[in-house]
Length: 85
Image (tube, rainbow, N blue to C red):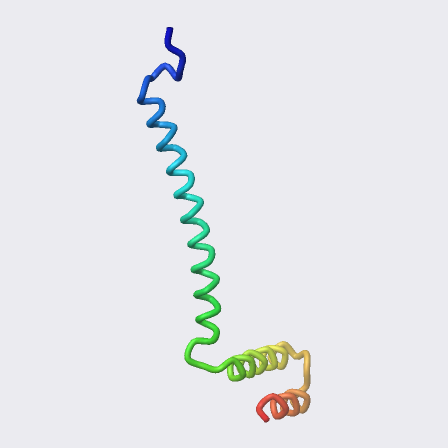
């Protein structure tokens, strides 16, 4: 009397294929996650030093605050001078 999946060796191959695909999918997802986070950090600092990037970011925030009316023109100019020193 045989016990098993009822499909003989075919059932074993299907189960093996399922697990290989599952492990491959997990590995692919991990690789995609880390490659995208690395690409984002490269895009922020590629070709520039970190100080220039931080100044540019701070100036952009300052411009946005001025455009929204959160700070006055004199405050904007004073803060801009401090950031560009």
